[in-house]
Amino acid sequence: MAGTLPALTTLPGGLTALALWRGASRQLRREWAGSPMHRWTLTRPRPDGLAARPRDPRPADVAAGRMILDGRYLMGGGTLETGRRGDPWDRPSPNRRFAQALHRFEWLPDLLATGTEGAAEALRLQLEWARIFGRWNGFSWSQDILEYRVFNLACGIQAMASRASDVEAAQITLDLARQARHLLTAIDGPVRAAEQSVAATLAGTVLAGEAGELLVDAGLLRLERALYETVRPDGGHASRSAMAALDLLLDLQALDEALVQRGVAPPEEMMRAMDRLSGAVRFFTLSDGALPNLQGGEACQPDYVAAARCNQDSAARPPSARNGYQRLEARSLQVLADAAPPATGAWSVTACAQPLAIEVLAGGRRLVSACGWTPEAQGPQAMRLVDAASSASFADMACGEPLRGFRAAALGPRLVDADYEVEARRHEAPGALWLELSHNGWERRFNLRHDRRLYLDLAADELRGEDRFVPTGPEPTTPEGRRFIPFMVRFHVPPNVQASLARDGKSVLLKTEGDGHGWWLRNDAREVALESSVFFEDGQARRSQQIVLRGQARLDSGARVRWKLAAAEAWPPPH
Image 1 (tube, rainbow, N blue to C red):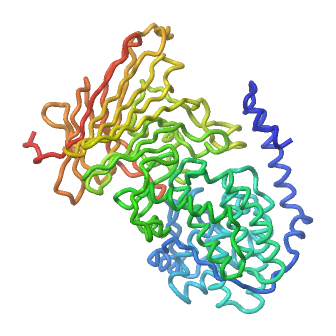
Image 2 (image 1 turned 180 degrees about the horizontal axis):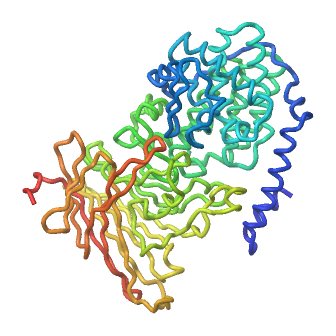
Image 3 (image 1 turned 180 degrees about the vertical axis):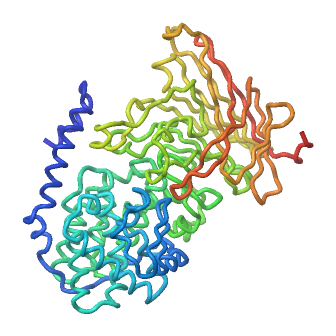
C-alpha cells in the first residue's frame, strides 16, 4: 500500500486524497502513542547506565547559558523571565517558535557550556520537564520537536548524570531510552528520516546494556535506508538546502565519534554520505565563511559552518557545480546561481519557487542575496516565492506556491505548480566565465521563457548580466486582453549593505559597512527603484532594501534588461 501512495498525487484531487489518508493515519498513530500499552513498551528493556559520551560539534553560546542560569530565556524571537531557578514549564511561552525551542532543549548545549553549575541546572530542568511532560504530550512528543530533544539529551546526559543521585540518573536514562524508542517508531516518510534515525541511534550509543544495543542496531538499519534517499550522489541534500546538508553532516559527525567510542563500525552508507556531504558543504561555503540563503536555508554564522571542518584538510578548490547550483569566481567577485528546479513532493516542504536566483559576494562580503527564509523563520510562507529572491518575475505572479489549509497541515507546506524546467550551460574561456540559464515557469501563463546570462569578466573583475523574456509560442489571450506584462528584476541586499540611487536615476551604489569600497549596479531598465525588504537571521526578520528594475514585456516580442556590477572609483557627489 505504501508504495502506491505517491501515485495518488498524479490523479485529479490526488493531493487532497493523500492529505486525508495521511491525516487519518497520523491521528491513529497519535492515539496509539498516548495509550498505556505503547507507553509500557517504551520502558523495556531498561538501560544499565551510561556508555558513550557524544559531543555535538556545533558551537555553544556561553553567554546565553549564563542568562539561563539567571532565569532569562531568549529563543525563537521571544523572551521568558523566570527568575533564578524558575520553572519555564508551568507558564505560557511568548510564541510557538519559543515553545518549540524550549521543548527541543535547544538551550541545553549553551547551559552545559557554563560548567558544573549549568549541569546541575540542566538536570533540574530535565527532571521538571519529565514530571509534567514525560509520560506523553502531543506537542512536546511530536516528531519535529522530539528529534532535537533526543539529540541534545544524548549529547548532554553524561554531564547531567554527573550531578545526579543514583535515582535521578536512572530516571533520566530511562527517559532518554523511552523518547528514542518512540522517535524510531514514529518516523513517517523520507523527510528528516535520516536526522531522526541519527538522533535515536546516538541515544543508543549513550545507553549501556541491551537497551542501547537494540537502539543502535535498529537505528543504523533505518539510517542506512534514509541516507540513500536523503543524500544525493553529488553530496547535496534531497531538499537542495545547503543548511540541511550542513546540519545532517554535523549530526553524522557526532554519531560517528560516538560509535567509535562504543567500538561499533559505522555502516558504509553512512561513511559514504559523510564524504559526499563534506564535499557539498565545502562547495556551498562562500568567501565570507557562510552558506547561501537559498532553498529554505540561511547563511549561518561562519563558526557554525566551520564546525563541520570541511576545509580543514583540503586545499583543493571546490567544483564549479553541485546539487543544481553553479559558482563563478573572479578576483573580488563570487557568484552562486540556483540553476535547477526546487525539490518536489514531500521534499519540497522547505523548498522555494525562486528560479535562477543568485547571490553575489564582493571582497568576501555579501552584496546581493535572497531574503533567507527558513522553516524556523518568523515570516510568512510568501517569502518562499520568487519576489523574495534576486531573480525576475512578472507582475504579482508566482512560479509555484506552498500548500495551504488542511492539506498543508497533513502533508506539510510542500510546493505545488512549481514543475518548471531549468536549463544551464556553463562556458569557460581565458579571462571569462559565463552561464546561460533559462526556465519555463512563465510559459504556461504567458508563453514567455526567462533567459538569464551571467558573464564574469576575470580581468576587469566585473559581473555583467542580461535577463531576457523570450516568446515561445503564439501570443496568449490574457483575461484583461493585455499585450504588455510588467516585469521586475530584483536584487535584495543584506542589512549591512547601503544602496544609494545616483543622480541619473538608474545607477545604484552599493557599500557594505566597514568597507571603503563601493560597487556600481548600472543597468538599462526603464525604471529603477529602491524599495524595502526583509532579511532573516537566526529566524528573525531584519529590515533591508531591494533594488527593483522594472519594464514591460510584449507578449509577441518579449523584452530584455541588461545590468553590470563593477567596482566604484569613488562615492558619487552629494545629490
